[in-house]
Length: 343
Image (spheres, rainbow, N blue to C red):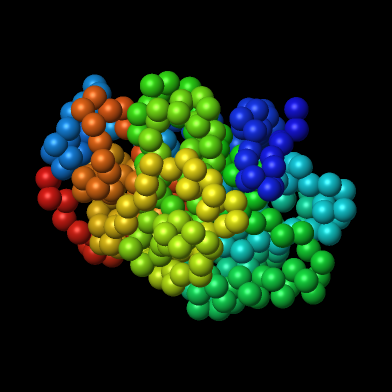
């Protein structure tokens, strides 16, 4: 069964997500679903509702290979390259997580890889890419500047571009997160996901659209990095400044695929300040004993601050999308966290 999609209507067949899961099985981890009663209690106080079972669930993609969900889409894309694309080699652009995922997937597939990262990318993420065998090029002060350099190198060397979020195969790969949540929590009512370019949240929401349409999928963006919500408001892809401490959410724009999928399938998107996002990092470390990067804690933070519309009896799952934080910065990041009112 192939991955099937229609570019004109920007639709991905429901069967494509099952095929994606089959193709990446054994190549990526099947991550666990964690649970926290303490987080649920705080979420209940903040939102004024009761969660089913007094529990908040968390999909632990920070425990995924390379430390983030990105390896799902990258592995699927590398699996489906044709001979010419494989021979050309691949190139990616990323602040870190997609770069590491592409580097690892390419190494396992025997394909040479180049990743372009902003000059200020977290050192641990840069070294991880090199360890996986990629050629790393650091360029520019922003993701947008690194993107322009990636395009120049791609054209100069004839490399195959593997988009970090805006390709139907990548989106199908990321959507396998949603399938696993549904297997572990079949009656999930709300899924909350941090949003950069939108590949993860659109994959999850599209995968669940026919399987459990009652599930509301909410996105969380940094207030100063709003690629998807700005595109939805404008009705078109627009460039945005992207300067959040949650570097994994600093997409310079939404995509031609993620914009229509977001409009079609998302319940909505809320924004948080950087200190509010960092309160999720702090809570996860102190109360759940989980180390998250800021991007990976955005969904948790939104629920703890009462920003997600919830209903009595909801079964709620937040996605811990990544855990690639520089350990030497963790103390400073937590010190900058906003207080959680209900704590």
